[in-house]
Image (cartoon, rainbow, N blue to C red; front, side, top):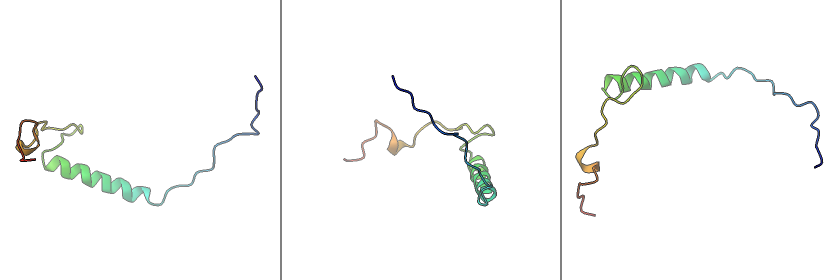
Length: 63
């Protein structure tokens, strides 16, 4: 089997993303809203696991 050599592979130089801090703040705000609404707990797990009546398999939505 013939081998191929790659000339000096190296990772590209990364720069800081100027949008990252704002994205982190938006994510924190979304988590806070989910916790306040009682959807998730402090660990990020869903508190309620039941489905609304109209989304249950046994519901007849007329279709």
